[in-house]
Length: 589
Image (spheres, rainbow, N blue to C red):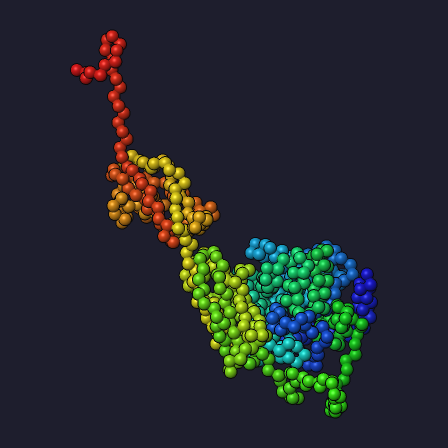
């Protein structure tokens, strides 16, 4: 209750002048095709990551976000048409198209990743904090923002340092990356997380349907269950690694869970507090997540900075004491920029990956690993390596994703998640590249082989017979096993042959195709989850004889089933009787 009262008091304390300046600054920074980093922008304590993970490993690159908190009262239902007259209605409502995008993304994730338990309200909370629900719902009928939403340049000047990864395709910046779109993805993350949420055949970070679906998949990676608070916290922090960000998103999540309503596109309210703006007084302060002590007066930088004092000379150490060591990683000289670990990477090497082969549906025994090295061959730690599954395959990494980003360890090695083979057989490639540095990647060849069985047996022992021109009454059913265990989804080929010649027979028993024509070889058959396969009905032509139905599988399992085509046996003559009533077997005249 105290926190809520503080928020109300804070909002009341902001003067009209400060509010006008804040709104003007927001309007300018969020104008179409204009970046949001104005002159004089400074960072605050809330930009410090909550852990040592590099900023580029978050969805947004730990870009600034809106710090406005939900209103005190729970949202009440309101009409979905017309222009709201109450500021509270405008503040708590979600623009119609944006709300639809969140709900569709939730529906798709419940189908694709049911164990994630993603609520659409979480997407709404992040969308509110990242872009004010796409600048109050300024989107067209397809969900694309009217004018791009581009965050500050991540050049290390008060922000994370992320050099350009997309040649300016998304953010228009060929020097550094900027967060883009209503969910504020940095281009290097969008490259693998992007999704087509509106079915137009492309993934666009400026489209709210695409961005919402991408955010859902991003939050659902790593097998997280968002109904578990610890996993929910991890997922939110992976989006923007700040404790204040986590608390702000959780506040809006709880607010939207209590209820919200739809408002017309373009009528949503715009937030005014940003985590990087010391002028509005609405950003979090150190130690007080999501709160503020009121408006702050901007400090005036001195035109002539005072020179720093030289360090005081150290006193000689007394015997038996330890001499202080100089810093192992001293600050670079003034006017220079310390190279990041990524800057020092010269090439990637295979870190020992061999023999990537797995049977369809199985997990590959080996994992893909790459080592980042300098030109001298030294290991480079804390570098992000992107592993991408390439080629005509349905193989994925654990969790169903085809792209994974992993940080190299102290030995310079990054190990990709386990590969899981799909049902599509054949060769494909896993490619390792350095995120944020254009050095040649390393390709790893992988192969998916067919499921196999070493034994085929009939489930019944009934003799299979048929009269010429008739049909076999009993179906052929077999079971496939591998080392005694059920062999499911194993391909089976059925061929009708003579007992002496393994070639396909041109007479005798046959199957029928969809047009009713005779066929004597069937492919594409597969055993079910229990390893069972029931073949289609068999027919016979007029040729009598003994034939063989030969069943084969990958792995060498073979089974021959005997089929007989013969005329039905004529019934024995009934015995006649003589006039005395005694049976007689004498031939009749």
